[in-house]
Image (tube, rainbow, N blue to C red; front, side, top):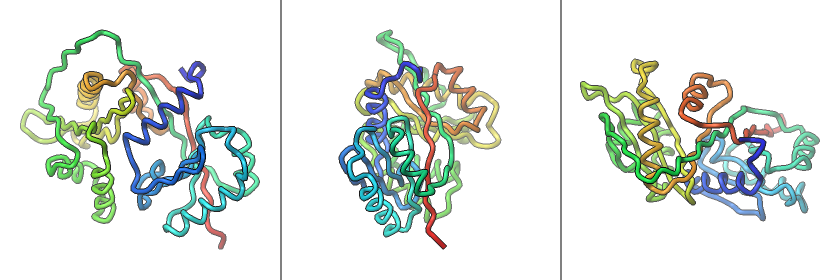
Length: 258
């Protein structure tokens, strides 16, 4: 898919993903987007360019966003997708920005089959702002209280098209969870997590089938997700579910001079 995915479609997916997982603050600078979420996740705390042609006064603009990040107490990060273009990369190289992480964006086209029939299979669909979701994710994610408070703030920014999916074992204990959101006919899946004692038992696979069909019913024509390239079990799961690599991205970081 990556070879045939044009920049216009890639940009549409990126912009839909912004809507699906808003940050706490966003600054638009032409086709550059700077986002801030108190350091919780790289995607929500980084700068990126959505257009390789938008390079006017690039060094001055980059310096402005670097200072903005430092004023907010986060390490300056540039999220580099294929939309950024070679001139941005050359500038980051010249300034000594380091490389961090490598993530693939996988996309699945929803079948044009009208109705879908999804069984609940011990799955509850809840509002991400509900106590049920937050208590479940507090246990699964294992976040320290300060990080979990930021997570709660981000949940409050989600659009009304966001759904929390909780899958339970037969005895009522939580097995797996995922967050699904739809924006601009793109469904996004985040936070697919399985309890350690329930891994390799098919819970995540069954939950993904449910989430996909649910998001399709809510208007998604494509479903996108992100996964680190080193997470081979997750990539294998997603490919079995019909996902293909659309593109990948890395982060470039600029540590403060000592």
